[in-house]
Image (cartoon, one colour):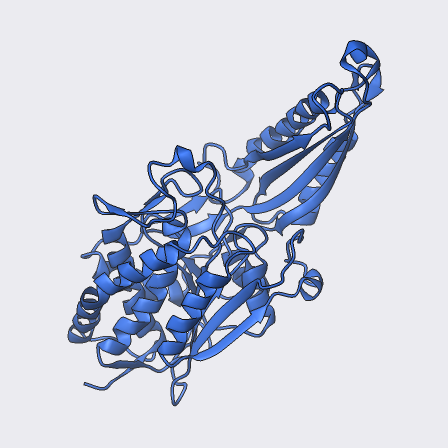
Length: 436
């Protein structure tokens, strides 16, 4: 069906209220299930137990089930794939599909990622990152905000529509994907498997707002070579770790040049610092009493929508090639390799019927408040569906704090509001038959 087609159903006030009431009726169970999911530490390559939980919940609801392991060789053929440095053995996507008896409404993908970033030093948290405690109206834990609360909201939103006595008339795919935090290969694999729809909704932690635009991301590693000697003869050696600081400094200059170009990029003009270079990991040397012969630095840098990852990569490698300063009489050699994300950013163009439907649903769920939008300097899987399938993708989710940091948490009442909004959106977008 065309994305611009008229919605199959315009909900009555009574139908909307039944959906809202259904969300409230199941909300304690929703939060309990979210807590259970948070207790599964689904860091990269260890998502299986969390995916088992999701699979069981989807299967229990009578959905058509699909589960498959990502194939790095197949993915490598796609221009949007990230580079893979880990084994994908046991790294699975899970999709549950609702199919109406007669597909008269518009189709929808409800997407979310199960993978979470590492918790870091646990002693820096105020409590265990995995105990999923509720404190003063916030659900705590690694992945609570990013994005297990949104993933579960998708499931319970569909539950609410059906519990309200309404049967969606459009096909709905509930996706729990891996690899969002490092390559984007999970959502890309789902697209390559044939999962498409008239719209996509991804409830990432986005402050009760809609993302209008976001950056692309490249992950890469720079290896700097040195000349080992004994410390008593340091002047005859070449310290690769010292040199790595210089290399990162040169990349900071590239970062600042890209930030200076923000006025040329729509929606990024008013951001303070949209292009961020992050030094995420450093490793080097072999012995405390040897001048180090090598140093490797893992980095992440952003790029604007409209700038291809390949073009940005050419600028990065050209900058490294220009480093000719000497350290101890030796030219610095810095070689970059891609290690994960190799992704272009995207813009959600205004005026789609999907956005208008979400705007109406947001008003109803948020007591008449208008739907806000913003631009983020972070990565989102929405780029997969926008760039490679031309599907309007709504990234819209609950209020959170400290994602990727210590004491990550998500606001519980925001989860409730977002779940109501998603449920109303499902009914409006896909259309419903009223069985009451």
